[in-house]
Image 1: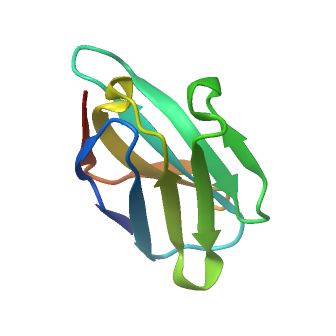
Image 2: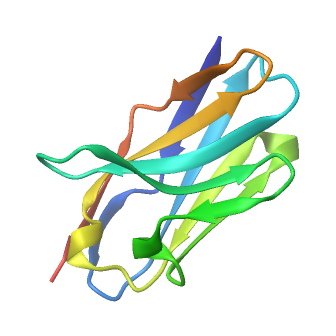
Length: 117
């Protein structure tokens, strides 16, 4: 089994910054992609950013230039640096890992980010 634990959410004013962290543990073998998704109230869960074990990144258009995803492979940890936050960034942010060896996704429980105007 694989477990994901997120941290770093909270309340911030518009224009501020937050850094999310997600540590993965368990049976993690080989190639994988880690990422962040978010779900605002009443909306579907959407991609924010992903990063492969080789370091290739992908971002939603809405966060490009403001958010940066990174990872520490030795610690199986992924980070999301969020700058210039906007009220529309308010959502529960979920950490995800897709492990090629299993062909499966695993999810964290989520961390709430609230951006006040």
